[in-house]
Length: 230
Image (cartoon, rainbow, N blue to C red):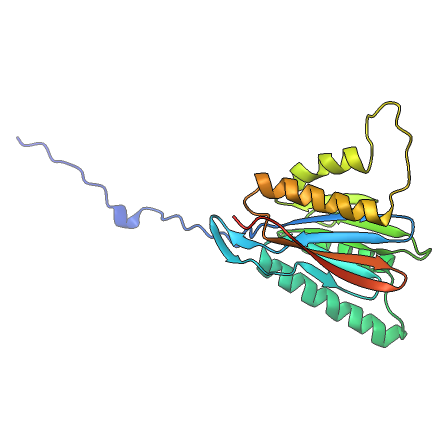
């Protein structure tokens, strides 16, 4: 008697489909605040994996004369978030006949991110500006809207590399026989350039050049600083 061979019917087996809605397009953002100013810089490289889409992408979004938002990460999420944020600020302007303050804008951004907590924006956000007293302030966020107010912050693909440098040079953490001094605008600008030069050596998603916004009571001044392009 011949033994029968069993062949499973793979046509009825469950098929797993995978869908990844996120794409990390890299980039880094650094911000340093002083007594009457705040400086934010972001690199201009937009990439995915080992492919560079453009070397000239601005990742700083001016929300008002005293508020700037720096974004890095998924670029499509960045465009969606900033479009909605600007629309809400315009609605506030038309309803109250005044520009939304940096503090209020920071709270609104936190609420918007928390609203999307079940399908969060894949972005590293750093919002900077002048507060109601004219002092510089930096707000950093996690993907679900937790907000922290600081005087310096690094975020993005090279954030883990840049933050320790800021802790040492600006925060002067765990340093003995060092007297804390106020950060001047010139020093803050030089530190931002130095940390980006360091990041470009170690992070392939950060490079090409930096766009820098210097925010004071006179307005927003823009600068550009070239980095390595390989």
